[in-house]
Length: 157
Image (cartoon, rainbow, N blue to C red; front, side):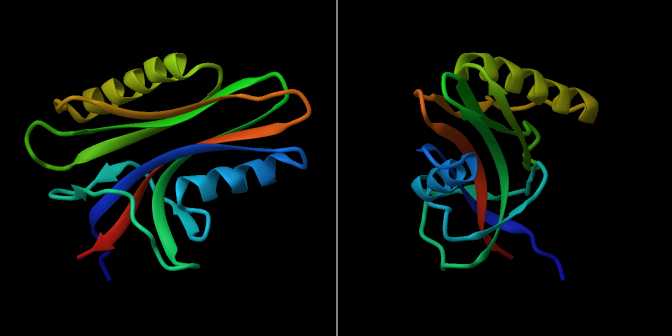
């Protein structure tokens, strides 16, 4: 059985909790609109002709494939999680890179650029313009925090 994604959306968010970093992660997923799915992490290939759509609702408990970046932290830290994606100039699909750091969104964007350039170099292809979705969070005292960013596949052919 072949599952080739035909549609995807991109989402990002952050969450905080006084209880634990797991609860902060849960809040971030809920805020990003993917907290009621069973997420399955996949790697970095956007199939040929896969179309980006607006974020949509999915059935509760659905097994949902996504490229997920997450960063958890605690009080006083600044954290960031994000993805970068680009289509190949030859029209043969695209690629996604995920990243996370204890640091700023600006720093993470530079790291994601390096990753995308390396992906293009090792495949000997050129990319269209690289797109970024990055979430940053400064975590207040007495809290845990989490940032998430995801490219979520929604339909298959």
